[in-house]
Image 1 (cartoon, rainbow, N blue to C red):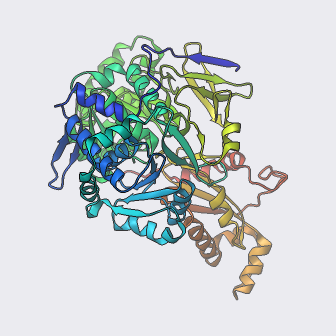
Image 2: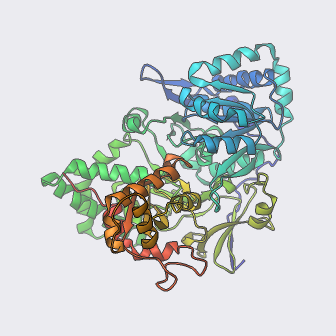
Image 3: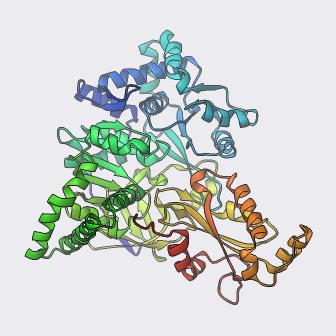
Length: 605
């Protein structure tokens, strides 16, 4: 490695513990505290103590045993974030079976692929909509036996099945689960467009969870700490944060509806928030829109400028000028305090992950009084590997390694990670495992640098994967190839890195377009500009895009496209010799179109 940095552990972490032991230990440490809180059918917050939740998990685990789930069997969950998701997940893993999380937005084709690749034997669906996805492909999922619907009493049914299983049978199964055993297979986008299953062990989860608690002890362990979690639990980062709450002393609030998130902030009053950058962007934009364009808008604009300026000076380590201090204090009373109330008024820290964080947004919230601690990790590292510390955080970096984690930069500039949290491998793909994990080093596909004090800065992406502002990893190859099947399309280049949704820039083949127009009984066009403006051609492109979108989830689909009146060639640098589009070149060339048309900022009303 050209550069290397290790963050030492404060205390040793046992290597042979299983995930259930984190919950069991919490039940013994703080049996009567509030562990999990959720909004009930009456709109009020309900809660489980650690003992109540552990007993619920054991009851479900007994039911799984009664239904024939054995160690190593795969059980899928397709549902929104809820206590039921968490309880089922813990129950599955507690008896040595594997949880297979599936996003609610996955298409039936993706469900079929995941179920067959991981040999799913039992599945839990949120409701009829999710069950219908399974039913569409059920005949081709040969290992699948039972399907239960959470909204139709699945929890109660599984508990009923388990009443004939003794405590002794459960504990015998639980004690047999070792740290080296697989706990879950999490599917993430690969460079080819086909999701790859990441094999994560109990030891992977336990190590990184306890490391995280040691790293952020004050934020996670002081009395009265509360975290509101609203990311989908199919995302490994969300599951990691649940386990952090179990291993520490936090109360975990679960929410899944972004339409109610502001109400949930206000009523739950978190001290700690985990979110993707898009959430903070939405809150910033909502505050700006609410201020409007009159006097209030003028005040907000100056308040935002002051917050950003204050943050930049604070980050530089220089004394803050007295004029800026006074302006900041005034706006704190007029504007910032109201923004902090949006989060419930108690929040001290927020961790931003899953996608790059815009520096302006980071400086704004830091200046308002809410440090956004940016971090970095992958499914392959069991979520986080690097994060900014609560004290001494640096905007523009992704922080320093968690305790017990080593980061390196190889001779090509690629960021590499070595730790006990690095995955066991890629399910059914030993060749990818061998290529990606070399001598214990996970090659991340990202380019970066490491400072002398361990702070990591990302400098680019080696992989051709788009990461949206919502944290969704999107591999564009499959959708792009589908769009280019259309007779009028020459090239389709998807964009959306750090943006709120996926879009596409599409070029046309003039000769083929005219041939197609004639076949449709329409008049030919004289040039690419006329072709790009032709409503018949646009309708055909839209048809091709809609068809391609059927292959993927909504978050991965093309939501908007622009047809450009240009030809992509090797001569103008847009194509490689093998006629593949150069994404970076095209994205830079059409930067104005992307920023000002496709993702046009919303004007204030």
